Image (cartoon, rainbow, N blue to C red; front, side):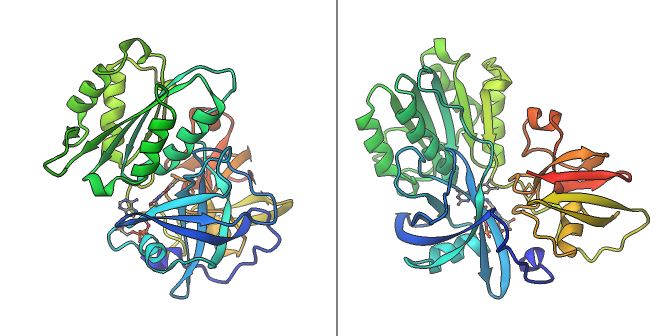
Length: 366
Ligand SMILES: Cc1cc2nc3c(=O)[nH]c(=O)nc-3n(C[C@H](O)[C@H](O)[C@H](O)COP(=O)(O)OP(=O)(O)OC[C@H]3O[C@@H](n4cnc5c(N)ncnc54)[C@H](O)[C@@H]3O)c2cc1C
Ligand code: FES
């Protein structure tokens, strides 16, 4: 697994304004397998929006590894940026963070990115219905705190799936928010393996349960509410299908995926190039690079092979860290899950899953 993220030479990021060094100010245990890492504010201005994520660049066992983590803090009320990391079984980075990271450690992160961001307006009055499972609560926590602060007349319902009472991340914070914002925020916990004393919803959120929960809501707002979903693929698919049954317009539904399977493309793939290779021009941080992309590599892979300091994280077309705008030519993009329809129309592509289909391709990283 480590070799996927191996890069040929150490690349110099010092000239890039995409990277920050963040120092850990505090570590807070949320559950047995999740910790929140709170950062000191860096000296250079560090901006983020609710729902965005950071890409951590960590040296682990002599290799550089990258992973994305959503900010759980709100840029509007929290003093410091924070992420919450839940262990994944045998996961390299999530276990490293939970086992080894301590106050005073510092490491590189890429600037905040992502489009799972509500457009908040002071005068706006909306209903928001949020569905989370496990660590999927992290971007939603940032979104919840931000909506309650900025849109004083908007209301939020959070439906949150976990295994048991002990595995509810942010349990106390959510209870406090519910008591501070009575009438504007409510959370419905659904537990798959609760203790006997549990009186709430029990089981997994399948289509039947999502139906029951939504039927319990004020039906008049279901069609006009905005929906934010974050959790495992199966969970999101179930909720999505239920919302479509409820005739919720698709442009009211926003999704963030953390994981869809193994990375589709592996950095430094040993596969042999077959025939055509095309030169691609890449504009990055004010410089222009010419990259020869063989048919067995993506644009990202070929650029990294030439030691160009391309931004990237998941290599799966999911996180959008490698996003660029296609200025000229054509590319074949294998997966566009991370991009909105609008971005695709505007010509954005994901370099980690794109290959040129002919000569004359020019991309601006933005
Ligand atoms: C935009 C974005 C935001 C994210 N935000 C968060 C966050 O706020 N908190 C958080 O804890 N995680 C978050 N993630 C997931 C995170 O980036 C890592 O994928 C996760 O921590 C696993 O990394 P790892 O190195 O521990 O596991 P790896 O070593 O990469 O993988 C170990 C094994 O677990 C599988 N696997 C990898 N990731 C997952 C997963 N997420 N779920 C189930 N199986 C997996 C792999 O296939 C492999 O078999 C986010 C991901 C994305 C794309
Ligand atoms: S690196 Fe994540 S979408 Fe390309």
